[in-house]
Length: 337
Image (cartoon, rainbow, N blue to C red):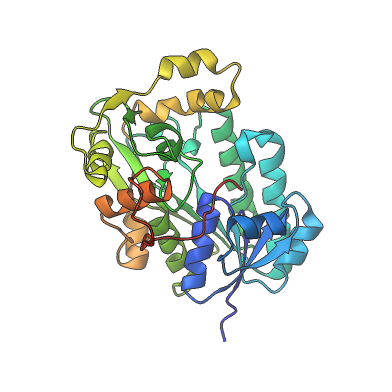
């Protein structure tokens, strides 16, 4: 009988929460590591996981939480970019130690930060990883650690995607820059460069793909896959989808204030990170999902208008529903981490 126990580290974050939900839907027993169980339960009262108290920086706690697990989802992410350089690698090292002790596979969400413009416009699994930011360099170091761990007997699956949206995730460009959560849309911020394409990933689709990859046949000891997601070929299609979801074809579009971000970046941590990642919006960036489709047969794909409407509903950006009604896509609110 298959061992279907998984430990999710970062289950109250966007990608961690969505992968946990997808695992549950596939019949897995999910444990979720959290520093504060009471807070996690308040934030996600209907989240059907077994909460385990512990800190991703505490190796003994992670190893104990992973005992008997066949899979560890490493979605830990320091909130607000605080001490990223001091935390992300030690957290991953603890996950590797726990996976080695439990005989578990690590499932790791990759990012596009690993790449510089020399790899654009189409990113493939073998594309050179020459990052131009501090955050990108850390992500490359993390994947190198995972590859080394795989060579030592710890199986690893990395799934990379474009910019996240949907799935009740709030820490992304869609939720933090394009729209303003918590109130009906007044305008859309155009982040990119006119005519320049960009890759987006609807989190529920990405999470479903990740779980299907884990459940297929005989996965390799070390494997990377790219999730194609929604390719906005000219930088205007996501804006058009938001307008359609809101039912407002003439909804205002304003340029994102990149100049303000640059001026404030020495003083505001979030703006500093945005400035470093700005190059990803100035050049076309698409992920080649050929390998993923070969493995799964097809990539999970919610129609873009449906995905965007659900994302906006979860952020509270559409008109309030009549009393007594409920969104058909309602899920536990999972934000932060």
